[in-house]
Length: 175
Image (cartoon, rainbow, N blue to C red; front, side, top):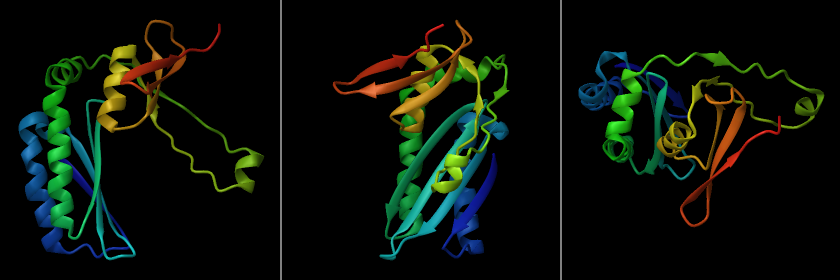
C-alpha cells in the first residue's frame, strides 16, 4: 500500500510515520499493494488530535475520521471504522475491485465570478460510470449523505442521497 501522510498544524515525527506504516500494512491483506492511503493529521485547539484516513483502491474509496487525545488512539478508531466498512460490504467490494472496466471521466469545473467573492471550497474528482446500487455503496463507504455519479445506464450525472428512515433518494436530470 502506498501511504501519503499530510500534517496540518501537527508535528509529524518518524515514530508517528512508523506507527502509521505498521498499522496500515494490516489492510494489505484486503487490497494488496495497489491501494493508496492518505492520512491527514491535525492538532485542534483543545490539544485533541484528529486523523482522517482515505484509502483508494480500484476507484473505490474508504474514508473515516476520528478525534481523540492522541494520534495513536484516533488511528486505532479510524482503522476499526474502515475495517467495519470493508467487512460490511465485503462481497460487493471484491466484485467491484475485480471488475476494473470502468471508464474514467474528469469533471472540469471552471471558477466563476461568484466564487471569487465568497470562500467556496471546490472539490474535483473523477466521475466513473456506475449503477445506482454501486453509487449508494460508495456513498456509505465514504460516510457521506449524498454522492454524485455518472449513471451507467443513461450516461447522465445523477445524485443519490440518504433520506430519513434509512431510505435513499435519486436525483436524475430531465432529458
